Length: 254
Image 1 (cartoon, rainbow, N blue to C red):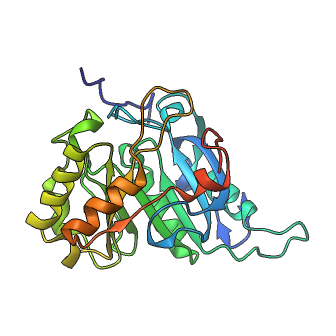
Image 2 (cartoon, helix red, strand yellow):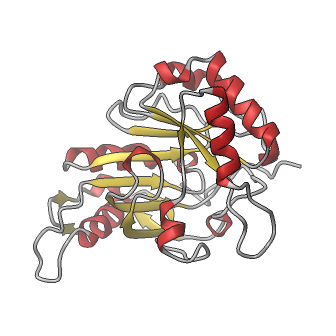
């Protein structure tokens, strides 16, 4: 049974960013941290992550369920201040991080994500957003790099992808399938072919589910997925979660 939609209760200056009294509306944030980008074509690059709280889907293999509820109430100014603070060295000089990812949960559930993206772009960041594909992405600034999931059958959330999003994808964007079985793979393969995804986006990503550290689910052996992809000559890239190789898979904030 699908949970009810995530609802929010009610609706300084630092570095390059100049705050505004108009940015006093609150958003709910689970965490803000600096790490490396763990997935996709920008994997390995330094990145600041803003994880928004709340999700209206319940994927079987979700590894960020801690972001479903709670979080801290923050204004746009406060979020920007934390991002800018993470981009400083101990001596106060710039650390030179140019990439920020908005993630969740599902970041598009919160209306404040749109002005947040605009402010990050305005001060010179390249902005990525990772979204489930269930929410319409067309309201985001065109400059935002969209990493859009298409949920496979074993996720427990099939048929949630908003196909209006296909027309909003551009050459800087990526489409991701998280795959836990042969049935998931065949679904992703046919979706990729039917919608000519390789010609719409920068990259199509096939990512195998990893074993859960708490043994709630069993992952898919990456080698099996690679062999299927090679056999079919599929125009897609294998996606591994680099941060789970560098750190323990259960570690948060990386």
